[in-house]
Amino acid sequence: MIRLKNITPVLCLLLTGAGLLHAAPDDDPFQGSVPTGAATGAPLALTLRGAIERGLKANLGVVMRETGNQVARAQRIRALSELLPRVTGSAGITEEQVNLKTFGFNFSFPPIPGFPGIPTIVGPFHYVDTHATASMSLFDYTARKNWRAAQANEEAVHLTYQDGRDLVVQAVANAYLLIIADASRVESVRAQVKTAQALYDRAVDQKNAGTSPAIDVLRAQVELKRQQQRQLAEENQLAKDKLALGRVIGLPNGQDFNLAEQTPFQPLEKMTPEDAESIAYKQRADYRSAQRQVYAAEQALKGARGQWLPTAGVNATYGANGLTPTDSHGVFTVAATLNFNIFDGGRIKADVEQARAALKEKQDALADLSGKIDFQIRSALLDIQSAGDQVRVAQSNVDLAAQTLDQARDRFAAGVADTIEVVQAQESVAAANDDLIAALYAHNAAKVALARSLGSVEQGIDKFLAVK
Image 1 (cartoon, one colour):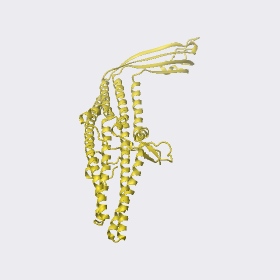
Image 2 (cartoon, rainbow, N blue to C red; image 1 turned 120 degrees about the vertical axis):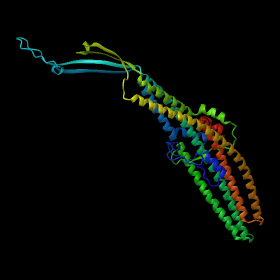
Image 3 (cartoon, rainbow, N blue to C red; image 1 turned 30 degrees about the vertical axis):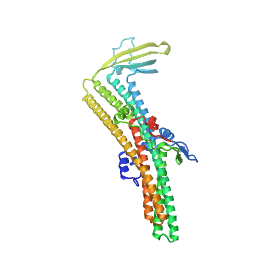
Image 4 (cartoon, helix red, strand yellow; image 1 turned 90 degrees about the vertical axis):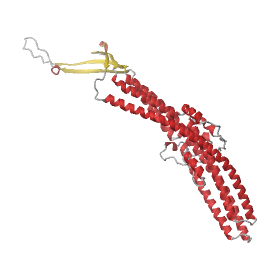
């Protein structure tokens, strides 16, 4: 996260509008990862592409969305199973004794000489039975539409996974750029510390020579301590932001690294919002996912309405039974069924209303996403233009501030100015450097935001960020 300290109000407004001054919430899965491996003793030389590849493998957000793919695939297979034949088999040996009285047979006849009567207890006897049973739906409109909905939902979840990869690339690129800005700020502050140290040494020498009052020494010493304090704070922030990048890309705990690339200032080729939107609607995985979710909701609504239609199926059983396996005989049963709803107490109506509400929700979400894409593209283009202009102004201001500092130091050395003028000039140089660093970061971060707005960030990030 960029600190507000030493950033001009215009840049604060720009970065706030681009969403760059707000830290991600702690529970954002795209700011976490699944670390793998063990830390090495030597620091890694980390390129932007290398960081992105690590993030795509270990980032928690993309790992969780990959798990969602598996769940959606299971739901689609389950929906398909309702349309496919089901075959089961069984084999067994039965030993049985039957009391015929339980079936309503009570043989009570007058005694007949020489006839023992009919026993009511039959058995024990045994038989073997093997058979296979198959059932298949011949026509089930609701099951077919539910399968279509599950198919579309699986495609939508897969596109959501692709969108998650784009979010990982954006998170890694922003973290990488932030470290570059931190490192530049650290180098700038170190230069300011050296300048403050030289000013303090000169003030001490002039005081000892009797050509400068003690107050100049105190001013120079205060400025030196202030710059040293800034250096400590910036170095600490750099170390923390490196830890944050390590978390995003899943580096082993305690693994140190150095950035192997820098991102120079490179103006973006002119692009109109209309052209950008046309590209985004074709490339953005989250937009295409939302479209598939709308289609899935439409199929689910048709399936809910289709419950009023009859369903047709067939059940068949074939097997063999007999006293022993060798004297078994084939037996079979085939039955066709036609089922239809007559009265269900309003359940189907409730299902239809629920499916219609779900469809409306998905349609509204798609419309909102369309407006969001338009907003993101236009905001990113405005930020790129504004940040590019500020980079050019800040570069000029850095040169002017450096010239002012040189003249102030010369005037102090000649004894025609005190340390106040030098300290003020030094602060102007520090502010100008901070403005330039912030403007460069804002420009590159806005290009990353535009790449995200257009979609396919994983393939197009190199086009927007010219690393070297």
